Image 1: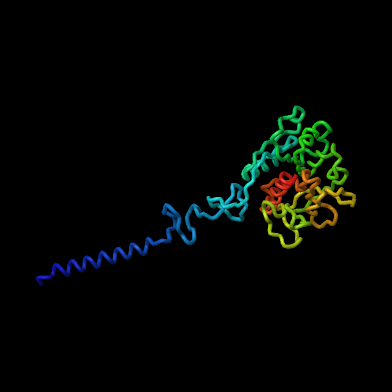
Image 2: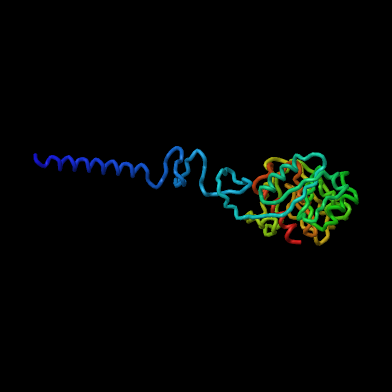
Length: 283
């Protein structure tokens, strides 16, 4: 028994080894706690109370389910947007939230402000709200926008701004409808559907723009359109009425008018950004 102390030492060594192995197994490379307590989340599947994966997203969330903190959106846009409305700012504020989140600078003006025109030198694109449509424009205030030579996108009846220019977009070509949420893309290779957001279209199946049926304004193709008119998005279920039309590259109609971007699908928001960028960069 004179070596009893060696047996005790061996037993203690084996016990310590077993404890170390157990700790290593329970605290391996994959964190499986109900609440993540790693400095860096290394779960194979993130089960944290707060999601801190590195996958996605945008300043504006356009995923079906997306609460990640890291932005991996490959689309980067910028520019100065001025929005003209008439009294009701509700949809203007919705556009502001969306467009500023995308990276644009945004300023909104009531149409009455055009009586003493602000300095629009730095504007890249004007957006004219549906509320600033019928009976809101005359030759004087219309010229404040058109005289800058900058692109203008009329939302719904906002295309009335083009009246003083006698553009096809407002030459008795308007048609109002309700109950639509989609368009038929006329040329899937057009920048409206590819740049900067590539929608990956492979056919002319309808694409949904709004989450629910919306009021929309369309332009009627009566066969007399000038060569510079591009009929890009045909109204749902129609053969000659178009909810997205561009003339001379820098003037455009976006027909969906009763909701703002929060009422659009992710595809609808991408189409709208593509429309801004097409009118802004292709001129």
